[in-house]
Amino acid sequence: MKLSGGLDYEAVSFKRTKPELLGHSGAGYLRQTGLCRISNPAAYTHTSVAILDALKAVSLPAVEVHLSDVNSREPFRRISYPGMACERTFSGLGFEGYRQAIQYLKETYGA
Image 1 (cartoon, one colour):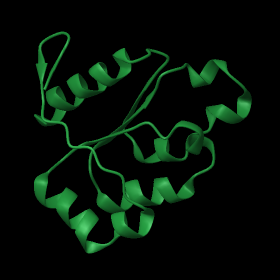
Image 2 (image 1 turned 60 degrees about the vertical axis):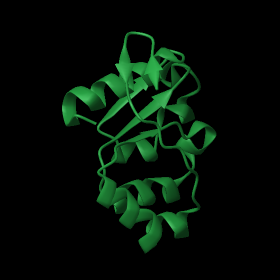
Image 3 (image 1 turned 30 degrees about the horizontal axis):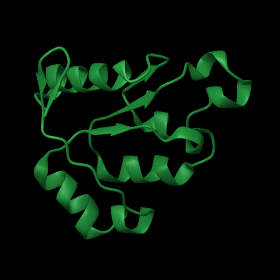
Image 4 (image 1 turned 120 degrees about the vertical axis):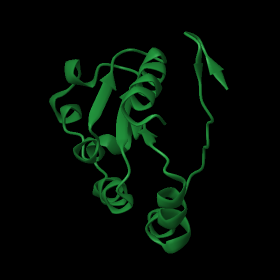
């Protein structure tokens, strides 16, 4: 897949529940393939310790993307549980945040 700016990458997208992600099939697959994780937990950002636990359990490089600038919104939105397991957050950049997240992971991990 090609993004504007000439970034080439292979996108693998899937959704799993926490038990599946923490089980052998989910976490094992992610570890064996050496994937990196880009997360946009949306409203779960401020409420989901389960996503935090799942991200920590798979021990993969992870970054967080938010389309809006969550730090300029209500105070409760400034807390990100999944972000605690992410090494970087791209916020308030719209869809450009995804491109920057992919670029960061490519430059840092060759992903």
